[in-house]
Length: 556
Ligand code: XMP
Image (cartoon, rainbow, N blue to C red; front, side):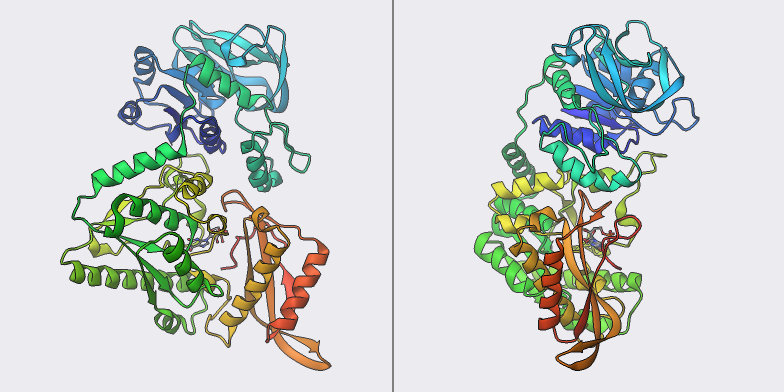
């Protein structure tokens, strides 16, 4: 295991991802975790991440007392990156000072001493790296040596080979995230993961082109790790954990949303415990065109999941009638879901003569990490911006224990796992769909006129056209929004006064930031025509060309 101690860098997840991409399991926990949390994970390597702090500020986060002694006496390799290096230097008795010249951006570094971390590089060899620091190591602790310096003479890489401590002042894992290129993170990330180390983003992004090589040399040559982490092993381990957790006469429930995460989680649990898993899928009247039929077919025909479909459209829509406030709509929907889920669990209890003991949730690793970002990191969970409703919210009095079999995986890893579990490919590649469904895509009162029908039809035409154009997989999310606004049009020589709809399509890595997708003009022309010709009640189609931030992806 490679353990990453997170000190708040925006790139910390990227270190975790990059190491996993090298088939080595890595986990990330808060940099200020107590020593016992670190030692209980028994890592062979610990990486101290970068962060936005200076080691000199009062509230700068640091690793637990005793960490260095523990690492040394257990032969654990430690690599500090940027702030992590400075922390290591300071805590081991060296000195960190504000650099005379700050280093932000592309820099040349030159190797000054042979070091395993740079592979076969010789003294004098240069490489371009991405630097982003104000402070620098001014005096190294005893036992440390400089192995590379920047073109400005600052310490760029250090080692204390005997004690197995290493440090890089630059970011081997990263690429530049300047103000607006934050939005390009998604694209850049994909490219980075595909192993192409010479990518560019709008011609702007620079990074450490040999960074991945450096991480590879460090993990395999210096630390002697083996690349053996496979998704098949993850599946087997999770199944074993589930079987050890759920007693042979225990029952487990799961709310399926029709999305990738809950489906993969349920399929995995089903593989482990069979039909002691009981799933529920709720039709809340806010689903997309033919969604209920489509997902139920996949659950049944392809995945053989035991799913009860509850038609609660009337119940939801009557509660939503006349409600226009977006937060209120979300809260009502969340509450109704819980009522239905509660009723499902109680019915099950009557049938089985025993309370279900566990609830499956498709929580992913970014949610786990972001549920407690390190203090002062400035990182927030996107989910705090809107009160998100996750299907399967826990009714308070049910006292169910949670099974979260995906909680150590990133989204693309969940897809990989889904593939092994034979979840159909088109299902795995579905765009995300929000828990409150079309309620956040019909602005205002969802029961107004035939708003829901209109948005369903427009969405279906839009998505089908995207699929026909072969661009579905290049888009994070695409959908239609119903605006409670009427405009004047002329259709078939007749003056019309009909609704306006908007099309939204974005690219993103994780939904936290997003960029609007650039369609070909001919595509837009055709879709707009199709919509106006086929959807009664619409005479105007607009396109949302806003990124996130400043907008959110959904309109409510
Ligand atoms: P926003 O609109 O906040 O959305 O930029 C970011 C991502 O989250 C999805 N989303 C939700 N997902 N429950 C969910 O499970 C929700 O309440 C919810 N609201 C937004 C959204 O579709 C996008 O992928």
